[in-house]
Image (cartoon, rainbow, N blue to C red; front, side, top):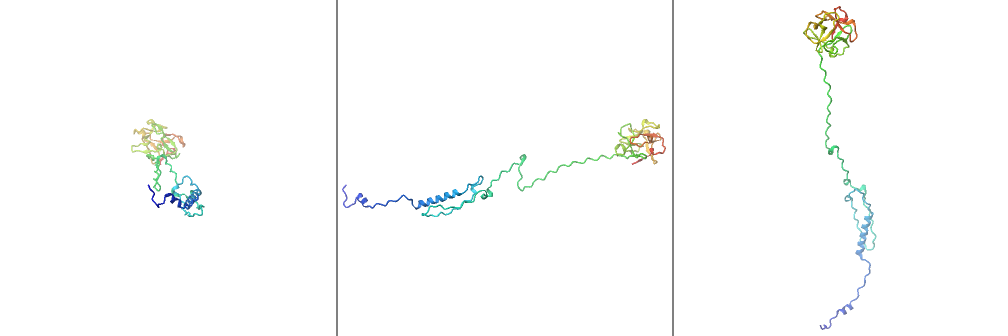
Length: 259
């Protein structure tokens, strides 16, 4: 291709362009600013003490971001006071409480403020039922002041004097058929005898004349069939003294009264 006259070539133009001055290897202003900010952040992180175990780090207050002066004349990092940390700075609301121990026997613990059931009253022991009243009254000897007793209260038991203790064998009852009874048995002249020193006893009730006794106004305890008195043998006054039939003589060992 023929050359165009009067048109400069690339080589001539490049040769006439002045050379650009060479720059040094020093960083620019933006590089210094970035380095200063990174150094300040590293100082803040290194000065903050480590958080204790068990504390929620999300609840720790953040350190206030302090402005870092943008200056190209100095790269000295700015010291920032460390934020408070440790157990005193932890929020009470974020403290992890230990789980409550399960109640014994699989029972759930009561909710706070829930009313507790009152204790179930224990049954009180019932007092023993009073013994049924034994019908009749005691027959007491005037001389000894002891009671006429049927002792064991069985058929054929001889009557004796005994210390008055309100036992059933000392309760006597005059019945309309003329008998005097205790513990379901009748006062009786043994074997239906009318002889002196016949034993006075208790026997199964038959209603015969040997079982007819009466305590008259003179305080004589008389067997109707024998017409003799119940007499404390040998005028004894000790407990266990026997009672016999003997002709009535008005002495104190033949005298009795109801009590």
